[in-house]
Image (tube, rainbow, N blue to C red; front, side, top):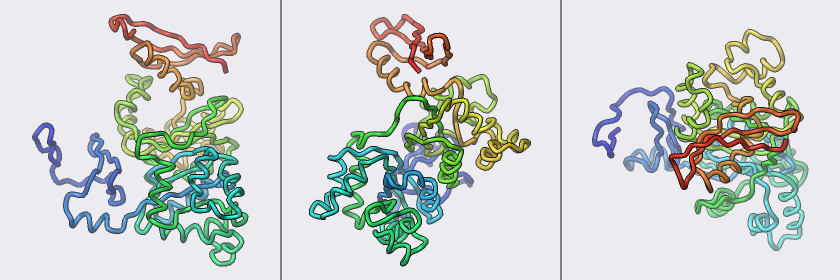
Length: 386
């Protein structure tokens, strides 16, 4: 590997155990010896023929009627050999639903389709594998769930669908429709696409770390969270860079010995961020996750630790990231605070929160520098109603 900018060899031929063949597709981000790389093209025609000749991307959409079974559906997607490269929970407007069902404009059941797809959140995914369009349609089964239970009893629609409208999931029929639908849900132009489903109230943040995604544990973790009585009210897959991760883990710098390993793990691949809702979610979800070190979990026998220790092989790769210092006030209002600060100040770091029971508010303390006079440093406190 040659570093073009510095005109020197960065890496000679060597074995790297953390990189797998299925990671090598155009557009993916890989982390090699602490350097994040974006795969933009194949180096020669032979490699392109071997790795890219049959690779396809298509849209996988979990409809509102099957959103409670998202964990099982994602588990089946992983077991079928698909790689999930994008994921977002969304709420479609009527116009977006009409654009999505443009091929059914003359069908008598169009209104039923629109009513279903706008009745609640959907989960849109970009999935990748050889012959993805054909293989995803095969995994879905016939459009009518009753027929699917007869002709393809192991298909998604047979297992989770109800009828020809409420049939759990959707997949495009062709390259053209796949490209059109993926552009609707994941626009390449930089616009946001359909609205996310975050509620920003009575919630906490959960992050499923990259190693769990690469090991195909996403579906199992979603099922465990649901079975514990939590509601996943928003979800999206992200690729974080080192700067973002270091800011996120600022409170751990110089405090925990695994800080560097934690940072490297978090930007080593895609992670999934979720908004979790329940009564007193921060406390109950932390108890559900258990201690940060899975080695501690293995010494305990409670239901919580059994669930948590199933997914975390070592401390720096614990799946769910949640912390009292980053409770729902920080995570849910982070975008608002940063937008406010960017108008008047050069944002610094969110230092932490503290509960004020008397006023029934929470405070967020932020270090900033004034834009007009950058040499002036301030500490601002935001008081947010709970």
